[in-house]
Image 1 (spheres, protein in one colour):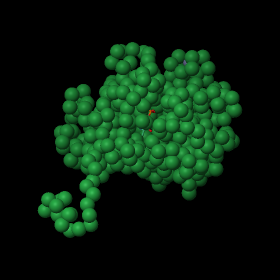
Image 2 (cartoon, rainbow, N blue to C red):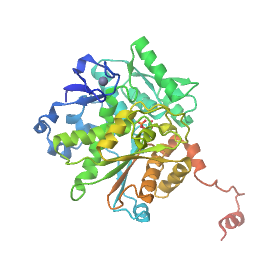
Image 3 (tube, protein in one colour):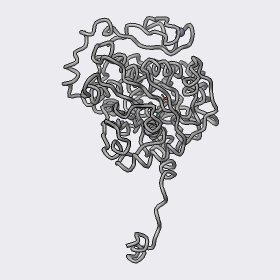
Image 4 (tube, rainbow, N blue to C red):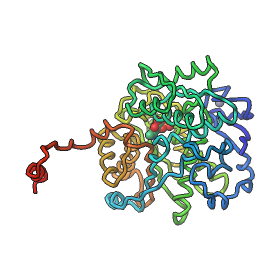
Amino acid sequence: MPISYFQCSQCGQKFEPETVTYTCLTCGGNLDTHFSFEEDPSEVNQDAILKSKEASLWRYAPLLAVPDPGFEKTPLHHVGMTPVYQPESLRQALDLKALFIKDESGNPSASFKDRASAIVVSRAIEANIDTIIAASTGNAGAAMACMAASVGKHAIILAPRTAPPAKIAQLLTFGAQVILIDGSYDDAFDLSIAASNEFGWYNRNTGYNPYTVEGKKTAGLEIWEQVLRHLPGEGELNVFIPVGDGNILSGVAKGFLDLLALGWIRKLPRLIGVQAEGSAAIYNAFVQDSDHVDPVKANTIADSISVDLPRDGLRALNRVRESNGLFITVNDKHILAAIRKLGSVGLFVEPAAAAAYAGMVKAVMIRKVDPAIPALVLATGSGLKDINAAMQSVLPAPIIEPSLQKLKEVLSV
Ligand SMILES: Cc1ncc(COP(=O)(O)O)c(C=O)c1O
Ligand SMILES: [Zn+2]
């Protein structure tokens, strides 16, 4: 579906699609993308989407900012439509009405970020762009490198040198040009923008390129198709999202806003942004009822949500407020406990994803949410991304000589 216009999420200014590439030319705010189906919902056939045999985010092509580029036999065509699990023991332990966990680890590069990268790379195909640069804590870069490799585009990724080795291994293996920054993610972000300005490369950065949100919104569309549509009554749902820059949250919210404009839902699900205590810039603004997101010095085990200055903080704040939601923080201990808890029902998640679950548990415990309302946790990345964190969440395995006697001793049988 062609874009009708971009609109600044901060000052409201509208732009013709071809007149702007990244952020608002007046105030620098992030851009929202608008389509003609918002005026005329009959342009989109809901039945055709629900009956589509396409088992990826491309089933929503009529709602997307880029046409389906094909490449059916590549990873680009196998992003999204991730499973939703309902672990009964976890639901019961918290006395929740219903608990859904949407597991993003099955995406081609094993995180949610493939959604944004699939749409950005498709935009690059459409606009005949060969080189794409991105700054990343690791996952966005891995996703960009994966999607670019799958269609023969060139990716340049700037990541902090402290990124977990598995993420750096992915970047290198996908053949991206990887430059590790002796600094933070925020430093990498600023440098990547300077580089794309200097060299004319297409920049995929989160909270900068408007197409990322258009990819991330597909999770909101899937939550509607897989969960919301089947809930009784008004379809109340609390959606827990891990937040660093705030772009995943803004993206999921955009999916719900598109659905509202289409009349396919009648109210917005409640969005609950979960930040790490050591990286809580947006949470701070929320509790202070402020419209300014002040930077922090981020420090958390959850590297994916470790951000000094959130690049989509204001929009995420507004989307949470609009949905009557809230922000909550969890500490690293909560995060490690959540890795173990989710492991106990067969889910292997990285710390950022565990943070979302830990936030849900805390929100229920301190009665910030009503357990009678179904909860959905967005588990955004695989535990294989950061095995050091996984090992910190468990006791080490005993090592024994290979004898039955020693085995009996260690098993106490
Ligand atoms: C696994 C995972 N979860 C959550 C996030 C947070 O997303 P955002 O920075 O858009 O808030 C990221 C971002 O890198 C991520 O990789
Ligand atoms: Zn603006």
